[in-house]
Length: 322
Ligand SMILES: Nc1ncnc2c1ncn2[C@@H]1O[C@H](COP(=O)(O)OP(=O)(O)O)[C@@H](O)[C@H]1O
Ligand SMILES: [Mg+2]
Image 1: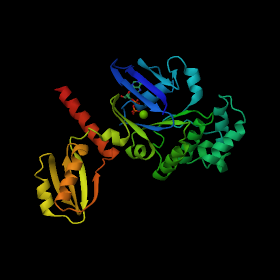
Image 2: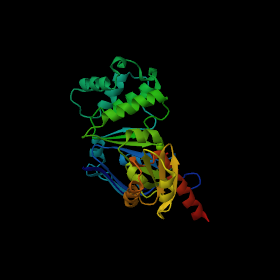
Image 3: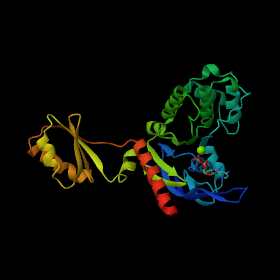
Image 4: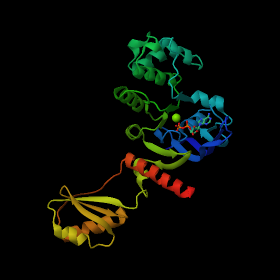
């Protein structure tokens, strides 16, 4: 795995013009993204996602820190960086009174592209929009407008794509279509960075997630990695051929088991350390004559993780205010 984006101590402070108050929109973040992955930057509104992506796309100067895209610094190599990135902003930015084709030609002319016409047709075919090539952008449905905007970001075959809230404001069906297209764009030579406040989207589309809140990164990793150490107790589910009260009462005597209860023919056990205690529990159940069908930890969803992190961050904030 090679690292294609590296963010080092990146910070952005805005000064509110009216009352001169300072907003620390991005507060000393550090992370990296590997080549070929779809990385999701997840956080509530105002968390600092757009500010971060704008700094990475060289549209906004950081107050402190640096970032490297394909080894090039956003402080020194803006010109070269622009040639290897595509950026889809929050509001799509198509020219409504130009046709689909003219929009792509207009954005294409900024890059030195051989066979621009062929390229445009290829992309539109990929995006199932070839039949709309001469329609005015203003006449397209919301979903198609967004697809055109995505197509635009690809015109110069960039290595890195930045999508800021790519499905915000779309109806569910159009959103699904856009997500499918994004997954199709995933390839070994292309890295996709998605800002989103939509958990479901991130869970469906992204290989790895960074969770940001109030300008700070709370967690980073796959949803599995993120959930590790987040909860004091993990849950183990053991499915038995036949549940017996004897097994439950014997297990509940083990002092490392926090809680145990039957559910739908299985036993659920809350414990601190799955890896350490699962083998001991399994051995005990077998000794007691239990016929085990399956033993599985209950995985937390990204939604569980997100809710928990936001709760923790509120608690920390409140205790900080006291
Ligand atoms: N140009 C600006 N001037 C002042 N404050 C800003 C500016 N842009 C963003 N902010 C503030 O920075 C914080 C982060 O904003 P943003 O990066 O847009 O968050 P997100 O994209 O996660 O919703 C917010 O508090 C926002 O009000
Ligand atoms: Mg935003």
